Image (cartoon, rainbow over all chains, first blue to last red; front, side):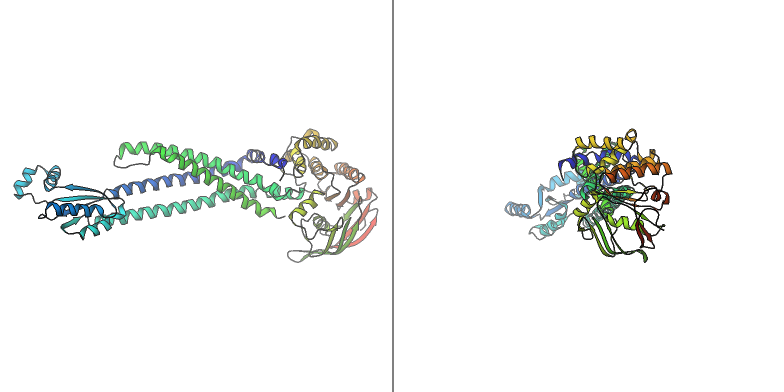
Length: 294
Length: 225
């Protein structure tokens, strides 16, 4: 194509979007609504995921140590525990500290001691895993070490929580894929409809002797423009909604954490503009190609 | 210049539109294709700019078969053929100026020339004052003038017209016929399908009459059925 053709093709989408105003508004609204829903849902899933991970990371493994071991054995055990893959931190809790912690929760240590005569707590380690998935392997490895009396990590409930969180994640991901899929279909259908309405125009262009690229490019650029306008508007709405909802929830549901606003701006803007651009151009290209062989 | 030999065309559903058509048209001729509705006039016109393809037979334009053309060659054929339709086929979302200029833009004329040529042609066809109007704002006669302007703007050697006066009143038809005559006088070959007896009888031209897809008469002067 010569330079003159570019000069003629480039302004076409802008003129066409203005003149087919009704169609333009309908297509842009479809893009805005579907991408808005997708965007909001993606942020929801990402935040649920983040909270789930935090909750899982809070799981601690308590390793109770046999009473009758000397300092050398203690040091050896400490080194062995620290060497287990996936262990992020090891905190030694002596029996006295353990009792103090317990008394913080349940009342003064004197009262507890009065009730049970002697401190029944063993010395212990509190372990944290680098990732939630490593908790169970760590428990396994620790249980096999010498001088370990018992290992506690909330048996049963931790496994249930992990299973539940995995379900939440899979469900979120599944719905996300479904929503994304319907967005692709809706947007490309709508753009195809707007091209379909102009199939006469396409055939006239052919009869006048326009080459395929001369016909196709304005439509592809128009689709891109539609997608970017829609994606841009949807993106602004998503960011605005997130900001509002986050402020509202942060003040009432203090135990939740949110992905900070600044962190979502770039992925949201980039992702939505790109998706809009791709859907718009591909939808247009497919639709025009259907009518171009005359 | 245009040669057809043993051309057959059947539409989906077994409707035979053209049967064993052979003809020769010289450079610069003015030919009427006459016949009733369904005689095959439009089919013959459509074959000449490859809107449809024949089932069998050969079609040559300027010595070259147009049956096996690739995309690029088809585009070239259409750029050398101006087509005027009964229903005008203007681009509704483009102004008169843009509709006519489009034919030059696809030929990659520089904008400076487009700006110069289009107003001249609109002036010649007496629609210069409608340059910024959209087709729906024009009368049938003016729409056909725009379609005519688009067809002839790059001086194609062949002008095809399919019932160009079908939707026009007699006075407007006469004005349009005058335009066809002018371009024919300037050297263009004109092939016009029509069932308008009056305009055929008014001009002493070659008339090819079709009936049920066959040529039943080919002579000069007057309605031939």
